[in-house]
Length: 122
Image (tube, rainbow, N blue to C red; front, side, top):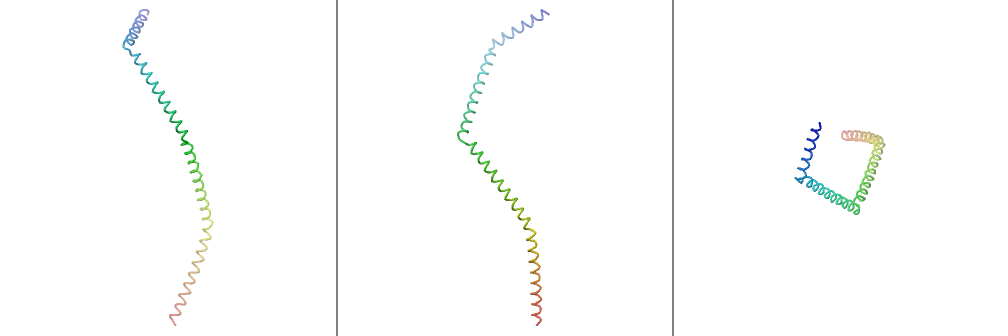
């Protein structure tokens, strides 16, 4: 078992030497540094853009437009509902008026035809 430990230890030591000699650790550190700098720059750009949007009042103007649109849509729906109620109330009256008018027109037509028939027969 001790021999096993010595072999693993020796292998680990050789691996560390090879990694150190190949400069892989240095390259990895440089890559991490570049990624960190890029992340910092991106975060700054996002922050600057957010400030520009806030200062331009785009969000407030958009919110105001949405509120106005909702208000107008609500008023339109209410007007439609009111119109539907009025039509349903007026429909029976209109139907009755049309029936009365049709009856009167039929009587007048019959009377005229009857009168015309008597006139042509004279």
